[in-house]
Amino acid sequence: MAKNKKHKILSTATQLFANQGFDNTTTLQIAKEAGVTEPLLYYHFKGKEEIFTEIIRSIFQDYEKMLEELPRETETEFEKINNLIRLHIHMAENRPNEGRLILANCPSKLKNESHTCQKIVDRQQEIIVDYLRECLEKGNASGEFDAQPVDHLVVVMLCLINGILRKKLLGKKEKISYEYTAIDFCRKAIVKHS
Image: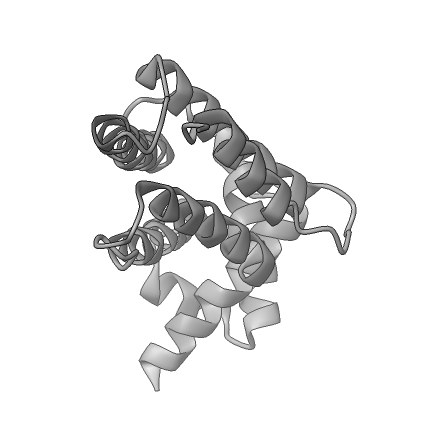
């Protein structure tokens, strides 16, 4: 039963932080909307910052697991890039509260190098950069790609993915996915033309 209450506090806080921001959300509001008392909230968490940190860690653990589950053995290296773009669009469409929570609340915390947000953003960038670099280098070596300079293209592709996420999460609700346009753009930019 206690685990259910803790989960309810976290899911309620995720929604509140995403919709109205960390600073505009109180522990009393979280408790009330989660259907628990404020003392019970403090039984599970030291305060709002600890709730936020646990949410961020949980989101990133799920995200890292999804990245690890991307197929490593594909017919082409471009298929891996395609899968990476689709994963991010899928996340934005199916987990919008989590994405908005990060985009709306983490930037102000990035000035503090020891904050969980900074550590997670650094780790996320490292994972994606390594993934894209490996795809581009293998694709260049096999003759599938004509992708030079690799490090510059990795940064451009990372910006493209992050930009699509921001547009999907913070822009007006649109039925446009951008998925096919982003994938086609990357294909035209890196796949070797015969």
